[in-house]
Length: 129
Image 1 (cartoon, one colour):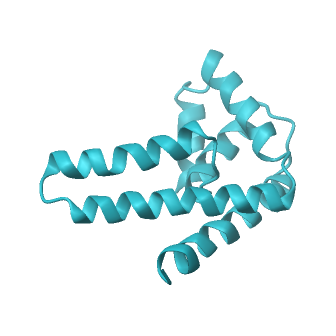
Image 2 (cartoon, one colour):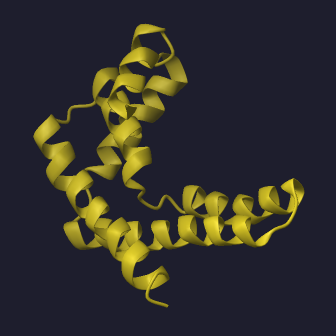
């Protein structure tokens, strides 16, 4: 899915110039955090994502749904929180763009703590509240 889309973006020539530099910078940054920091940023992120789903479901019309998802999603992106599915595209795109990161480092330093943090937010912070 996401890795294939990153490969397609690379093949289509979309990961050049500023997009390439951004992908490399974000990949290095996202794989340089300590486990605990990645975990907490992932909990915060999925809390926002779940809030967006909740607000979208609470709205009755399309405009309300769009406004409901806009602020929580914008917040997690602006604060550079960690979402496992988004990272499953961004990190391979960064590696394909030339980031000096191995697949093992990507998995160990980002995907594992972020997936755990996203699961905690979805199951504990949102579902149990």
